[in-house]
Image (cartoon, rainbow over all chains, first blue to last red; front, side, top):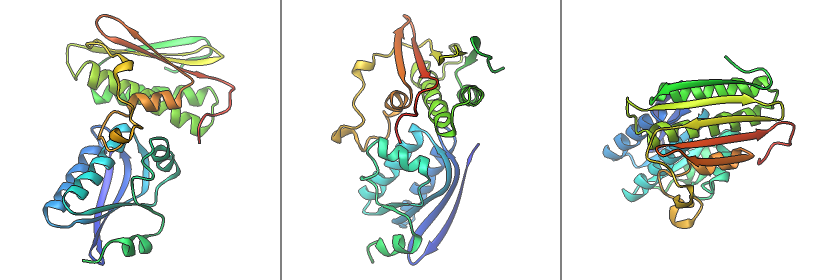
Length: 116
Length: 146
């Protein structure tokens, strides 16, 4: 029922590979802590790979928004990669799809981050 | 556990995330048994989860002395799910529109919107104290949305 997070670095971008559920009390707090930890360490180019996220609720959606605004407010960038159809549909319904920078391909997502 | 046609099951649960998960799972099982497709199962179970989160978190505020009640009924024509809490009440008219530009980047406030998006009917009733949400999915209709 919980979320899995693993972290890797590619060309100065930190990729968080997320899997499982991002929901109230489960993945939401883990995601918040992971993003805050990265920003605190000065890693401000963050790519959230949601390819293995099979479920997200309104709390999880809110956490994605908070991660995005927190990164932006600290001079960082946060993009989304590999949305599943369910997550894609939820972002469309909530009009957030155009708020986020959503990518389907990791290489082009990496290239889309501003060069330091 | 899950209902046959025109049967109802009711749970009285404490105000916890375990209760939310139990209610979500029951809704999923009920929808699956009713024969709706996978996309609709997702929508129904998510709407019910959001209603349960609303009851436990916003209604009962995780108060160990307050209960959430969840009832599940398949009438043959509809799936009817009722979620009640013992909180201070919820006036849906006062909820900000999560699609308004000034609210788009808020970190919360999308639960009721998603419930309304995913169910065919949503009714609020004030219990003084508490709120009852009734979620209805008509069976045999085309799936709504994407």
